[in-house]
Length: 340
Image 1: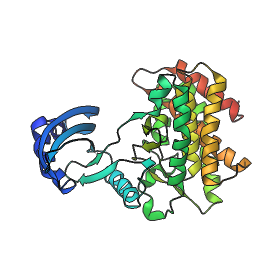
Image 2: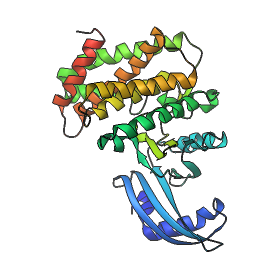
Image 3: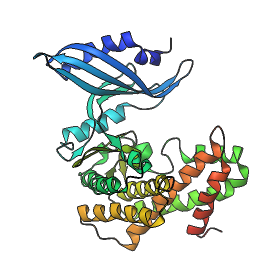
């Protein structure tokens, strides 16, 4: 049996969590039920990459039944220790509170290269976009902006660069060299255009870092599916695999681009989409007391365009390529960057 398959085995997980959870929930007396749901599953002959949700119901020492969403993210080929370290750093920094939430890190298992954490209960922002619930989207976005603002204001040092590979658009997994080689092989007619777009954006990033000695702790994978609405007054974020030191404008540009891209699938109103994007940015600037400048706008644009480029990469080299979906993005980027 592939080692990772054990993490989806009912008997194994029941015994595993019975041994592990009392250290974090000392009142736990007996586990009554564990329901396993696979969120992501790539299990090959020997290697594995998976995310599983263990909905765990246990009885405490007072006889009360408690249900917890326990998640496991494991891989034999990607770093998971850095995810635990990032979560643990934020948790120890009292980042999670009454208004802004995050998963609670439980433990890192070196044997499985797995991080286990208590998840957040709620729907992600894209859920409400898909339902065309504009009022709810407008309710969540200011809280989301404030969540990112709180993260970016944490004093960060090189010790907090939990995933240095993600600090640059050139090296964030799987790396620009991989993307470009894949495009050259599978869609050669797009190669020169894609390469020129990437080089322009990468040079912009390098120019900023060369002229600034400041970096910020950033989420690194900011988009609506990673923002969780917990209640009318609470919001949280998930998926900390790319948390690193970088330019805070990256979280803003990536989030706004994905907010736009996901919204146009469901909200047939250009003015509304522009309004909600501006709402997010305005609330962020207000929360950080940062003034919008031409320099900051260009940095946000750089990462906005980079996120568009990553989407076009996926369309071009996925198992069933969709160059017709990539072309409008590539054309827009060429126009925006003056590369025609």
